[in-house]
Image 1 (tube, rainbow, N blue to C red):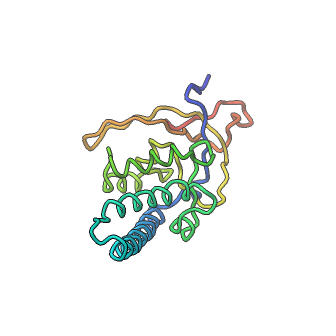
Image 2 (image 1 turned 30 degrees about the horizontal axis):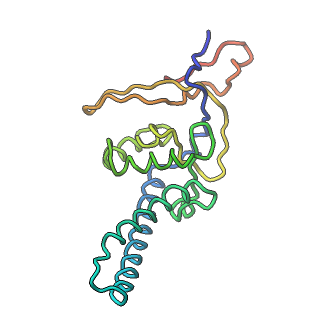
Image 3 (image 1 turned 135 degrees about the horizontal axis):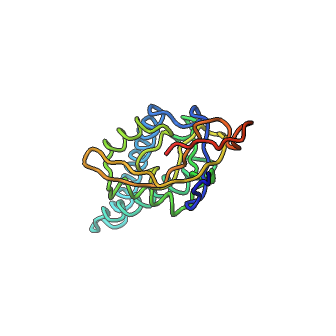
Length: 198
């Protein structure tokens, strides 16, 4: 039997290595709190500076632009780096691509933009996150990322197939690593090909 590898291969991990639902929610709460506190502190600093230097100018545009730039810096370059965000560090998590590599700035920006512009909302993302065997949110599925226990290593590589789901008024498809149903990927001692989840 020939396996379809037209979409390449991806890494899979021990099930315990994927971030749990509670860990993911805790990260969202911590990192949101950090961003809110930082944005408020930035706003106070800018308002104070403008109050003394240029009281006639409305600084709200500066607060928005600098706050958005700071949020991007926190959720994209910092989150993908070895330093990670405060939430990721406190919960002992890291983010990687489905190939087991560090995500690019483009991938992380795309993942973040799905929070702002959809097509998924927070509630749907959380429901999906709670049901997914690899602990992927819908954003992770489309960005091709995993959130894992820090230091986790792949236990194997498997073909990537296009997975389709229909439900709750949605019809979605995205590439997914098809984890083998058996522990061996070389066909085992009898030489029978491994079976892969679709």
